Length: 277
Image (cartoon, rainbow, N blue to C red; front, top):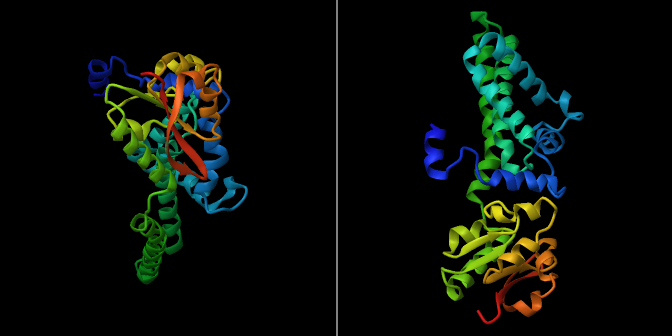
C-alpha cells in the first residue's frame, strides 16, 4: 500500500530526508540510533536498577518475548516488528532522534506486559480457592496503573509552551508581517517555519533541502546556504550552525540584520535580510 501511494506521489519509496539523516551521522555531530537506544533510551525506560539488563522491566520484557514465541505466536508479529524496526534503523545509519525510540519501547511494553501476566499467574495459581488472591492481585495492578498514569495526565493538562515555542512563534509572526510568500528563509530548525509561514524554507541541516546534503556530510553548514542566497537568514546568537553562515566571507556585505525578534536562553534570535533585494 505504501509503495502504491509513495511512487506516484513522491517518486520514491524511501523519504528524501534519508540521505540527509545519514549525512548527519557521518558528520559526527549526531549520535547514531543504536548508540542512543542502548546507552540512553532503554536505561531510561527501566525502573532504574543498574546495570540496566538486570532491571525488573528488562527481565519481564525478555521473559515476555520468550513466552510470546512459545505460547502466543499470534502476538509474535508485534515483537518481530519492534526488532525489525530497530535493526533497520541501525543498518540505515540514521541519527537517534528522540521520537525514534517509541516503536521499540512499545514492543518492549508488550513483552513486559506478557511477562507480568505470567508472573501474576504463577503468584496466584489456577486453583479456584485462590480467587480472593487473584482479585487482590488485580486490584493492586489497577492501583499501580492509575498511579503511573497520574503524572502523564498532569503533564498533558499542565502543558505550557516552552521558551523555544514562544520565540519561534514571534519569529514566524515577524516573517509573516514583513516577508513575501515568494521569498525564502534559511535556518537550522525550519519545521515551524514551514508550517506557520508561506515562505520557502532552506534547511541548514539538509532534511528538506537535499541540495545541501553534500555539504552536511562534511560538517559544513554554511556553504550550501551561501550558494543558495535566500532572501532571509535567521541567526541564533552563539549557535555553531548560525556561525557557519555569518562568518562566511562576504556575509556582512550581502546581508543586513533587520530585526531581533526574540531571545532564546538569553541569546538573540536575529533576522538578516539580503541587501538591495
